[in-house]
Image 1 (spheres, helix red, strand yellow):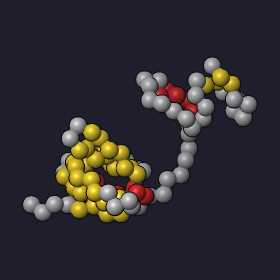
Image 2 (image 1 turned 135 degrees about the vertical axis):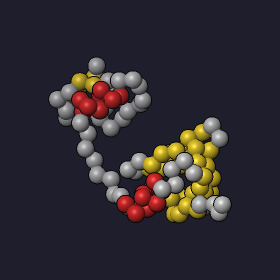
Image 3 (image 1 turned 60 degrees about the horizontal axis):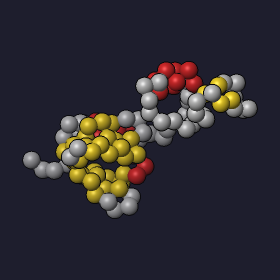
Length: 101
């Protein structure tokens, strides 16, 4: 285990640098990280109403992604396209379109 001079803690990874492992939930409980995330509650609510439905997302780079909303978190959207899950942070989304039925 590495020791970091600015923290009274021994850890495998430095603070803020994580990889997913089965120890991750335990590590997060021990670290008790806190951070601020700017939210847009109305935008997030509209995305939550699309859960399980197909939408088209347009990013700040002009990229258009079309897939199924499989998750909405505090800071990002999970869009499933085929067998891939895209995790798109809200600040990178300009707008989304719901197809007409």
